[in-house]
Image (cartoon, rainbow, N blue to C red; front, side, top):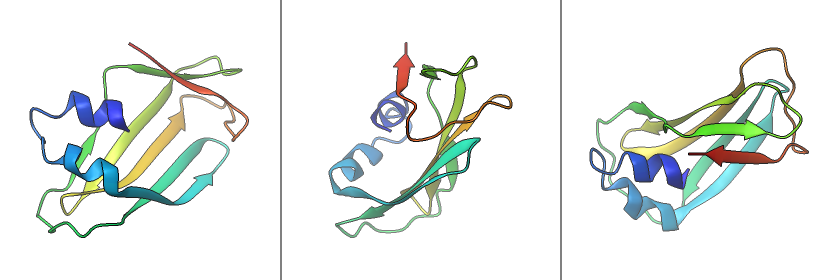
Length: 102
């Protein structure tokens, strides 16, 4: 999450201000992906910004052959959801250790 925000800070610098106030509402493992929903402990104004952000760093998981895809959903100007998905028929669960590689 922080890597995505940092890599996109020139275009969306306000998102760094949101990080200290984020918390995880829900994390769902779907075998082929992980969905993490975020909430805020401080109110931020909504905007009309709806985008998907990612990073140039590779995301890998131990015991999986392929890299993982990951994207951060910004909805109404707020950090909403982080989706991590396998690139193939590999299964990911909470036992896999995730690692970013620059």
